[in-house]
Amino acid sequence: MKLSTFILDNIEPILKQWEEFARSLQPGRLMTVTALRDDAERMLQFIAADIETPQSRAQQRQKSIGRGLQLADRADSAAHDHGKARAVDHFTFSEMVSEYRALRAAVTRMWLDSAGVDAESVAQLVRFNEAVDQVLAESVVRFATTLERESDLFTASIGHDLRNPLNSIVSSSEMLAQSTLLPDPERAAAKRIANSALRMAGMLAELQDFSRSRLHGLIHLSLEHADVAQICKDVMAEIAATHPTYSLGFVESGDTAAIVDRKRIGQLISNLVGNAVQHGTPSGTICVSAQGGEQHVRIEVHNEGPKIDPARLKDIFEPLHRAPSEAPRAPGSLGLGLYIVRRIAVAHGGTVSVTSTETDGTTFVVVIPRTPKN
Image 1 (spheres, one colour):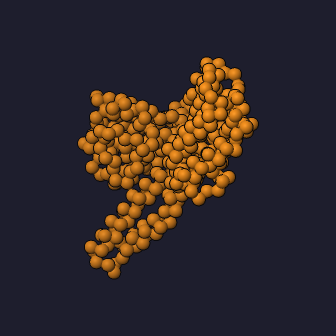
Image 2 (cartoon, helix red, strand yellow):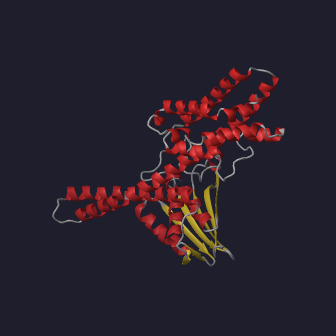
Image 3 (cartoon, helix red, strand yellow):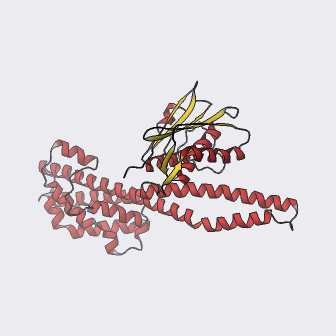
């Protein structure tokens, strides 16, 4: 008997073994039969059909890396649905993969016991294993995607829910810090609480921007006519007040008016200058320039100091990435600053790049259009 025929004729006993194995795993102990079997029947039907489907060597190669022809009659295959369901039901990655290992062993053992082994059996088994690898690869992709999205939603929720209690801490501690009824040591302590809470608020803002961009793609913009050079000067004045020991310079040229999100561009500049403060030479000069062109406005932030490792440059705008040799992050930083810079630039239809050499220092360049493209 062909393996494909055997699978279709014995779906119920195969599903029974699938169910028993899934119930032996920790998340499956309290699940219903329907939930345990999940999309297994559709996957078995896919596997049976795939065994009988002619394929070229190229198609065989594509299948081995999870890009085989989808025979499902819907946007999401049974394997996709299964991977998502197992993630939602709190199966671990290894537990989900072990289901396919158990399925492979059960079907192989049951079929060989009934049919014996010959040359045709070997060929059928090869096709069967290819099909199992295909559905496994699909499940793995959807499982990982689901976990990532759930993680992003959780992060966004935490960031949102913490805002109100944190704002309460800031306002209450600032009120105590200004009270004339408290002795100086207590007012100083209240001021330290307020400053710490404000740093936490900045970290939460980074976290929310990160989660929002992961979930929805681009950061939302509130566009208006603004002078980019003036935004740079305003941001630099704030940074100079909090970092009085650093030498900050600013140069502007041309018409720097553009339609931008004033707050986001300020955040972009603040993140770049903050990065220069953290990694540049303390005695060196940090120079910011805004240059108006015919269709674009160009912002440059330059700092002196050791060059960035070329291996680090290729992923410097990736979130939560830090080379092992780098110094610890500054207090109040989650390592998301440059990632958010890129997301803001891209949301405006612009670009950001960086060059770094031992002799010339490090320069970040942001180019944004004067008028955003529709």
